[in-house]
Amino acid sequence: MSAVRPPERAGWMRRHAMLLLVLAAYFMAAVCYLVLTPLWQAPDEPAHFNYVRYLATTDELPVLRQGDYPAQYLEQLKAAHFPPDQSIAPIRYESHQPPLFYALAAPVYQAVWASPLSAQVLALRLVSVVLGLVAVWLTYLLGLRLWPGGTRQAAALAGIAALVPMHTAVSAAISNDMLAEVLVLATALQSLRLFRRGGTSPGRLWPLGLLVGLCLLTKMTAFLALGLALTAIALAWWHQRPSSAYALRGALAFAVPLLALEGPWLLRSMATYGLADPLGQARHDSIVVGQLRTSQLLEQSGLWALLRQGAVTTFRSFWGVFGWMGVPMDERLYLGFALVTALAAIGLLLRLWQVRHRLRSAPELFILMFVWGGFSTAQLLWYNLKFVQYQGRYLFVAMPVWAAALTVGLIEVRRHGLAFALGLLALAGAVLGAGLLTGAWHRLTAAGLGLAGLAIAAWWAAGRRWPVLAGGVALVALWLVDLAGALYYVRTFL
Figure 1: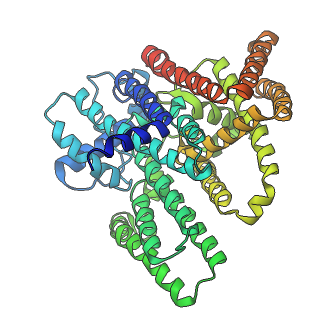
Figure 2: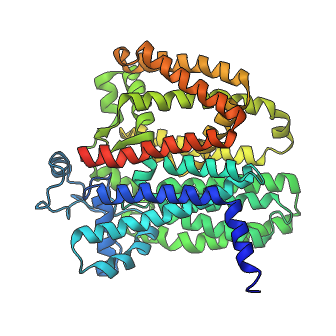
Figure 3: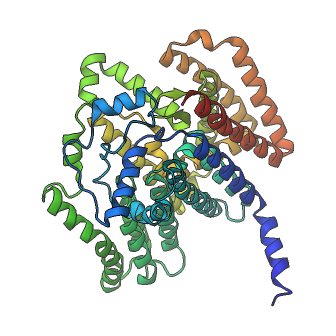
């Protein structure tokens, strides 16, 4: 046996070498953000840290109370870049959050509680980075479902998802975001198993119920896992037409572990915040006095300005606005991301048109990806109906969907001259649209547009002859921008 394992291991590493490179690139960039981001200079990090510390030191869950969102004090801290002599103890507005991430992080805090505060923060940030590595691996597995045997495409998908600068920054902060991503990804992969041989057997539905229950114990944005799982079950039953008894056994196998996990938390929340507020959201909304509400901005600026600001800020913050939404990147980088997005959108539409007949015969994967992205977008829009929260990071719970759209679109652009021609039209349209939205016509010069066109043309031409090289160049470029986010923007301006 020992003589066989090394060649097998070497063969596996050769087949998945690009995944290992993506994992290494992500880890290097994430460590840069972890080390270079000053204490508390990540959104909501003080509140998440206080939750972990309270649970680790008292063995009790915190309760959200009036005064846990000291708006004026928090603004003073942000303006002063969180001076070390100012306590972050009063910032506790995440105390209503589900407890799973904090329960996982509490032992880490207990292991380093005697260390300096900076070491405690770094240790807890490292928990998120490790979860980020798991998310990269699961995204790669999802890519292998999208492209069976296509390790290069799967690695490209994982690389895009991992190396978006803002996503890397979020994955190197103390928060429950990365655990939510990991569990939603695992839910999606388990949902896809329902369409294999064996279908909706109880042996496949109880792990799905378990994963959904864990999602509900992690973060509000992860609640979309319930919709994803129910969609998958409904589609599988539609095709398989199980008997009533078989479907009932499957439904119980799904529901029992879900309710066993979520039930105690809901009962505790209802006992704490009231029967009408099982998630603590009404309590949260009542204490965040001072946070800008959408109705106020609508009265001040009007509908068009609100929509324009929302679209521009969400797009930019998806790619990278660091700190507490206070450190944007260079406008030219956002323009580049807009151009790439426009090209990918054209390529994606062409690809969907080409495979439209296959989508009709086997639509499950497409429907699940669409539902996944749709629920994520709906959550962001719903939250912004109440509060002004133009933060693209709220879309990261469906990051594999957005990365898959970019990957498929760019592959199609690389393959087809027609897609390239339409992409150039999209390039011009993106420039015009960016100028219309931002009013920054002076930045969008003809020279810059020409250079961008030449770069895209060179990438397309190289991709037709050396596709692996073209894909590698694109990922390296994204990685360099990711590193620049940490080594320049975070290090210089935070």
